[in-house]
Length: 73
Image (cartoon, rainbow, N blue to C red; front, top):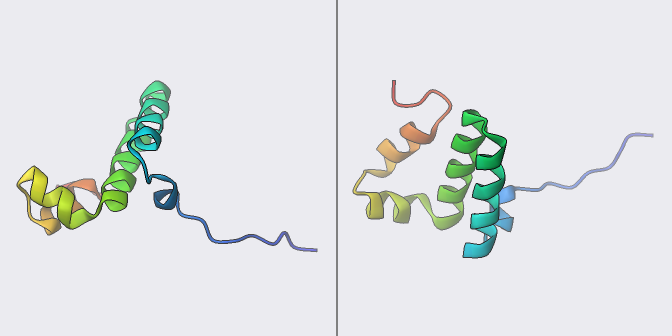
């Protein structure tokens, strides 16, 4: 019998500054740069890419490219 799962997105859990800080602390403690980059991307999605881009002085497209797996190469 297959295991039944439900969709889950970490972004739904990053809804308070405290949860965001705990997420960052966990990935920084792990030390894996790919995990840190993924967490920063998740946090940006949780806060709204447009808003994060505006605050960073970047276009949304530039922010998305920077946070993508391919980077801005």
